[in-house]
Image (cartoon, rainbow, N blue to C red; front, side, top):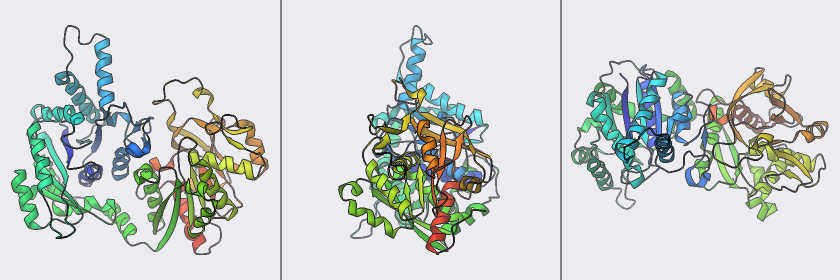
Length: 542
């Protein structure tokens, strides 16, 4: 029978529920169990696709084209899973489904209500996630903070699941902040106590409490949390700040959380296997090299806007036994004062990520030009790929005022154009080119050496593409399109072989990057940054 672990959070949002949920899954996976994960987001948006990254961090794209919460990225990275859009539930999605059923007449004669109709829809989707994957256990992270009005239907649904599925098949984990006062260094549990009380008022008594703190809680604090949380002391754990988030499952397992969960849910598992995971963590903590990367973006004020990209850079670094330091730079600073561009000379590599709209694009283009002209290793992703096309068209192909029609619809040289199937689309949600698509890799290119295969499957999220009318002009001037869609209509990777490393992709390799299995583009970029820093010959990636 499938078992369920529900993770809730208190005191404040972004307390670490996603990492805790991923870590619990890792502890179970290390014991030979098969987990899957569902993220609940109480916002009314149907999915994350139409939100600005400053509102909710990056949009994580699944293989089947789901635009989901960034926590699905953490689940995939920790557990090496490929989740689906159905693994992310939102208030908008649930209500949309119930309203559509009501319009079709599924509830004829009844008054449609939050209880039972909304809560039943939530429960059914949670159960289906486990059934479709034949999982031993489904982890459910409830987004937001206990006490938020929008989260109440979801908390009511998971309360009902204890009654329906049984005590032995359900487990409630509550994570809340335990702040440490700067002046006295005293740990304060009162916020956590209030959070647990809010959960109890809803009808949920946590089985496990995870204290989120900057440091390991002391025995007295642990006893106080257990006393006021009405749980045994061996059910209290601490997720304290670590050198890397990938240490968290090891930290919690050492405290006994993995064994406690298995005993509580009657899983007969004793052995656990962390060899590969521990090797990866050790490489991050004890690197042989160090590189500094400039990430030039338009959402640099919130690093969660680029979390998958940042992690992919670190995955590449770990494989190369290298610590990757990322500095997030606002692209607009290079527009306001062009002299600022010289700041990029102190970095070992320049990375230009995704983005939308005109703000900051000229600053990104300047950064790309600086990387190309000064032979600084460069990697561009999605919008970074498109802006690299624009920069090359302007400054090498002499196509004055070349641009994307997304930025300037009246450009005389629209080297980046709207995809034909995107014309006339009225709805913005879930209408981009999304999900996994096959890419053919051209032989005898940097791409072929990086990927070491004839084709690859990668995830996408874009509306615009290289205008085919300009491909020959770009190629005649030295730009190589080393990866293309299977029909050769879409340019997927570009490279400049005469540079130390100049590479960009239309796709998002970071979404499939994993610890120990880095995205080839990101790994190649980091390897080039190390080699150039060490004054080695241009890497051949053989």
